[in-house]
Image 1 (tube, rainbow, N blue to C red):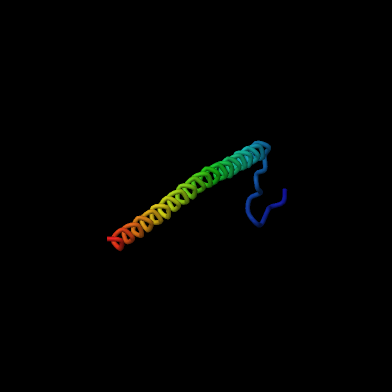
Image 2: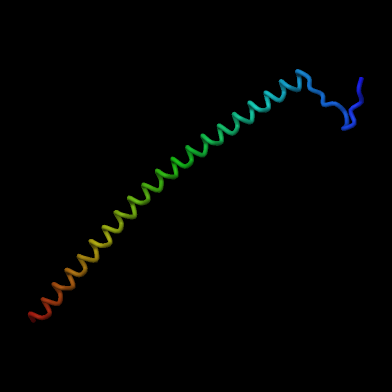
Length: 84
């Protein structure tokens, strides 16, 4: 038997090989689940952002409408005061 000058020989048994396969499979599954979770989280965030954009647009339209109404009433008031 030759002596290894770099240290002890690595122990490569079938049991260690099987443990390595299991660990690799578990890690792959964990990574896949995390990726799916991120996709779902981004999708739900995108839906919320879209809803918020719609709400802001509606509020902006209401604000412009209110400003137009105010300007209209101001013009009517000026016309009424001028006619007196």
